[in-house]
Length: 508
Image 1 (cartoon, rainbow, N blue to C red):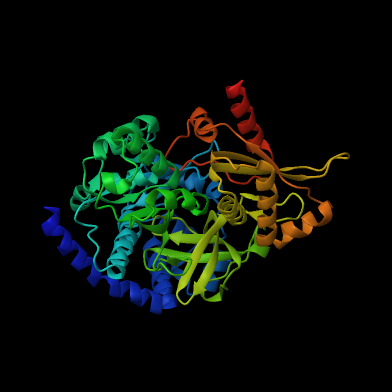
Image 2 (tube, helix red, strand yellow):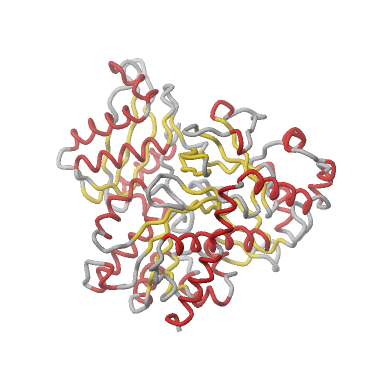
């Protein structure tokens, strides 16, 4: 069947590429159309009436009238939605909620997902991504087999029997149209399992005989699946298991620390990478070319974008800028208004524009994941790049890491402490330590200044933790799989001390 339908789907998707080209050529017109649509649709909701959306005529009106919100402020409205009230933030019925933590916080976020946000944002962006891919690689056979999706799970919402919540991937899998269901694997009974250890095992056994042409999933779980496949099959090359595999679609966490491992796995097998920025709140961007960095910001899928410059972070009433005012290479906090009922919502991610013609971005970190204990202003993008380059220079391979400050005392200088789980440790840990410090100094001038002559910051402490420490720590918190991940950076020592206690008490 795939041999007959696949080429037809590929042809159809190629015809859609003109829409993406138009978006790239007319970005502001595209965004203003989205802006007007959102206000018009929500004007008669309880929220729209409260802020009198009918009288908003410009972006300045919108910006001056509606504050920038974090999840905690919107939570009472979302809670009412979850209990069954409708027409609050968005006019159409909200029946699904994407459960998101973003970090390992005990407090989960429940992001409302309207039919429009599922269809016109997430699915539309996915179709546009595949459409663009098909135009870039004319000989693709991606639809002559199945896509393996490493999704999460969902369950019935306890507040209202008519609504459900779960990981974003699970919500999207559950709501996929019939044709899309045919083109994905594994079976729903496996895809929606809660127990990730059981899921990986069943995934490996159930998909080995499938004709898999593409994989979608976060790097950590994808690596675990591939390793299990090798153990079961006795093979050491993915192409021996799935000869038609051509594409790995990744997102959720930075790919930089994992690239070397995937390069080793995919070496000389003709498997391409494609990066996406797909969060519970919306599908924001996807990789549109393979020669320059950055992902194409998706401007015509029900999301209106605003940006908070770094100098405004932490202010109660931050000044935002619109798309036409951003500049390349500066860090911004992302603010969105969506067709799911999120209004001037601060996502929590920081992004950087790599291009403005077209608008392309990189995710640089999280607003709340940084280290600035000594004025060094280190963000996740800095540490990801530093550790990736250090691994390249030393031959080490890193599976996961977290970093926190060691504060100044009367007798000791301050520094950064790194907990690192290695797949392959460096032959000389002290050399690794010096090179990592050197790379971070090259990337971040503030860190370099604070390290000068060891006045404010001394050399980092590197502590190698036992294999599977981070996995087992997440498991102990009941946070395996889905969108749960270990925070890369923290400005306090809560996470790092907890992980250290867990790692070394387990060993003893």
